[in-house]
Image (tube, rainbow, N blue to C red; front, side):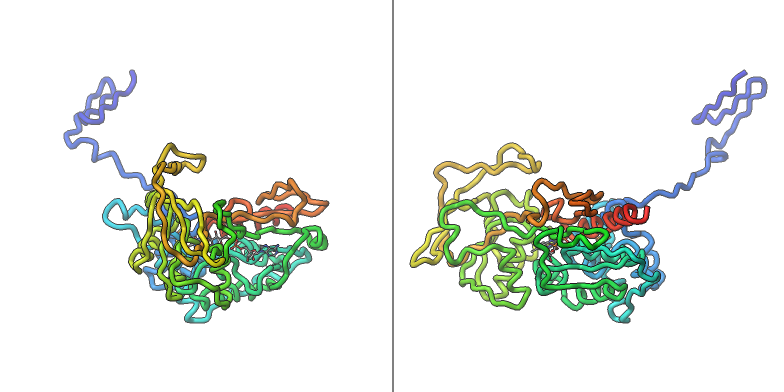
Length: 424
Ligand SMILES: Cc1cc2nc3c(=O)[nH]c(=O)nc-3n(C[C@H](O)[C@H](O)[C@H](O)COP(=O)(O)OP(=O)(O)OC[C@H]3O[C@@H](n4cnc5c(N)ncnc54)[C@H](O)[C@@H]3O)c2cc1C
Ligand code: SF4
């Protein structure tokens, strides 16, 4: 006769012998401990062992925590400051009261290594294979770091006069102190990576002597506004403005600056213009909800007194004496979602208004320039043959403008793909 197991009633019936269990199921049901990936770890694109490094910090082993993060990311000091921390949205503690401040803890561990002047040390001697990394942003740095740790010779070729990509020439110093960036780049150099600045690659086939090439040139081409008057003196792209500023030049801007856009470049440009002594206003064509900039940055801009005008788009830049005098805008309303999934801004007829301005900073998106590759080359982290060469691509150059942590993750994945291709 089949055994009958009645859970709620606590009766265990074996057919002939019936046993009454007066205490219910607690006598024989035991909690089962299951080891699962914490949701925060899962949400970190770099794959940082968040639970692990927080445990080490709790035990006051800050340098061990830093070493653990360095297993998955070469830039914890950078991420501890600028990562929009998608991990914190998934923190279990958030369901109880408030999420752990994971990025601040990452920064704490990285700052301990900075204070103690602890650096990476090569653990393997370099092998024969030589990889060229084109572009020294977080994707290039990450790929170079993980390849060097595996014993590859790596040369990073950078077009600009300084290493770091958007970490150096995009994100302003008040958000990312350069001594932190310099330290984390020096750590990568300590592994034997060679950096060459002022080394723009115009044709990938010039790199045919390398065993593999990683293209990590980012997305630096600013999208045009496509309105009359865009070519007037006083209209400048956000990336150019920030690049000049970050490389120590003094970009020419006036006292009344309007920044067009709603991403990180727009916010950083507006906040930097403010530090230049200009009054800056941001105009964004959608609503706050759709704004792609990091939330804390939007709040910081508002707290500094930067006005953000939502649901408006420029239609004309008006000049006087060859210089910007005012900008004409149309009010917008939100329609059905577009291909990006965000609600499409639709102009409201007859809603034109103007703003008196002397500088327009455009920050409506950036795309990549892959003119160094033969037309039609599909660039990917998995790599492919270009004129007999092994060519890989990653970071913003492949995905379009993204986040630092995604570029780091892309660099690491590509290092793995290069290793698999070259060593099997
Ligand atoms: C103003 C601004 C603020 C941002 N703020 C944040 C933030 O707070 N948090 C966040 O997560 N993300 C932020 N981002 C996005 C983040 O910086 C990028 O997603 C990230 O830097 C992309 O890394 P990457 O390595 O792919 O490219 P990049 O960082 O763009 O680096 C590419 C490098 O390649 C070089 N290069 C280009 N062409 C050539 C060539 N032909 N030869 C040699 N070198 C070449 C470039 O000079 C550059 O140094 C911001 C971006 C900007 C512009
Ligand atoms: S890199 Fe970003 S997502 Fe990953 S642990 Fe750090 S703050 Fe979180």
